[in-house]
Structure formats: structure tokens, C-alpha cells
Length: 320
Image (cartoon, rainbow, N blue to C red; front, side, top):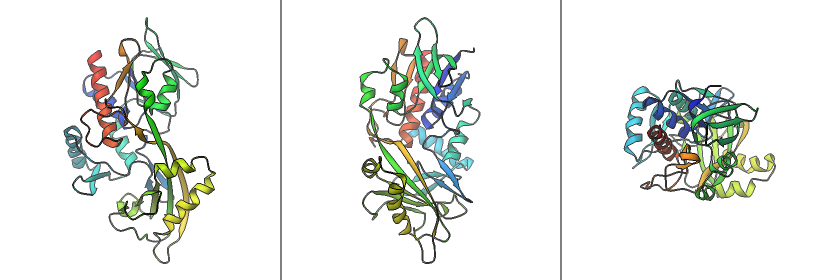
């Protein structure tokens, strides 16, 4: 079987940026292995009837020169737009956040709907990435971008202690279709004056990505942790009440969906953009919980995932 130069586990933003960085630096023999049916991770968009709803990241901000340079290119290409906010503008995709992920992934080789069961570090040969179906894919280097708790399951006996300190809060997102307008003011985003336990509410028609009124209601990490073991009906009912509070007179909720994010936002982070492990550091772990030392925000977000992926890609390029 072909030995890849680099296998990247996880097709979210960190994995995509690691792959782009490698390819831009002449490393073409790479493969992203992604468990879902699409790249993007929490850059997630769902079709609901005739409409669409982002149900992961809604927007991103820019603090680093690297991301600012890329955003200028994305603005020119029509991939993103300035949505709202000062002093840091909130940028969002013009066609839904998952569309941005797919645009960034471009021609990167990706193996979708494929789960990895383990990574074996053979000192006298290539790394071995074993899939759940029993297939084994050899590689000289491996970049792991899965959330730390999932990554630890793949890296038994390899991962350094600091990785186990990373923990995540869950998040429940309710998605609702309305048969008429919402009272959410333009530009379609509210994150103040909301009931306890609610983080933000978004109208995707006013956001500009949906032809019909679709509304996402995000619950806080604390609320989501308290409800994580409840039945779906018990979870969605109070979230729907929040959505109904934004119905204009005469409008009704006509559709309901629930998204569970198990690893939504890191509660504890690592102050380094990546961690190396295994024989000769051939395995690199990165992701949105791996922050640069000079990170001013100090929390997980689109930009931390973006920068971590670039840093990991550059490091693997240096090691070749």
C-alpha cells in the first residue's frame, strides 16, 4: 500500500489549514481522513426545507496578520463578508460556513465518512493509521486535529500529559423554521438580553444565507452540561420557547431540529499551537484548543483553529 508523506486526521479548519500549508510548501502527498460526510467540522451548515442554517460557528473575528491577509483574499473572492461588529468586525461566509470550509479545502485529497481507530508508531518503519474497517494506511507523518479527548483514544501511551488537561463544554443548538418573519433585528444576530442559558440567536434569512426564515438558538456550555443526559424532547422544548419569543405576530414555528455538539468549546487550553509526540515527533496534535503563546483572546475560536493548523503544517514541513 502507498505510504503517504502526511496523513491528517480531521477535516475541520485546523486540518484544512495544515493541508493547505503543506501543499503551498511543496508537500503534495497528503490525505485528510474525516469521519463525517463533509469537511468543515464546526463550520457546519444544514439545509432545512428550502432554507439553510449555520449550526456551528456563526462568524469569526481577526486579530492576527496571517488571517487578515487571507480574509482580504476571501473578501475579494466573494467567499466571506463583513457581517457586524466593532471594534473587531464579525466575518461570515456568504453561502453558509460549511461552504467556506469546502472552498478552502479545494483540491486537497480527502477520505470522507471514514473513522480512525488507532495510530501505531512503528520506530523501524512508517506510522500506521488503522481505520475502523481494519484498513491500515502507512504514513511518514501524522497530524491529528480531532478534539483532545477523541485524539487521546487514538494515541494510547503516546500523548504527553498536558493533552489530558484539555476539556470541552458541550453545546445544544436548536434550529427552527418559521412560516413568517422573526423579530430578530438586522443583521440577524442577538447575544444580549437573552434568557439565562441562551448564548445567541440567529436569523439566517437576515444573515443572508437562507431564502426562508430559519433560526438557530445556541445554549451556553453550563446549560448544555446540565441537560446533556436528558431525552431530546426535554432538551428541545425550552429551546423552542426561546425561538417562539422571536416570532412576529402571525408567524409560527413549522420545523424543529436539534444539534448536539459534544466538544463545542475548550474549557481548558494549551498555550502552544501544537504538540509533538511519538518517535522523532512524527505525530503532531493541533486544533482550536492549542493557542499561540501571544494569543490575546485566550480562548478557542475560528482563528485559533486556523493558526494552529498553519503552525502544525509548517512544523511537519520543517521535519521532512
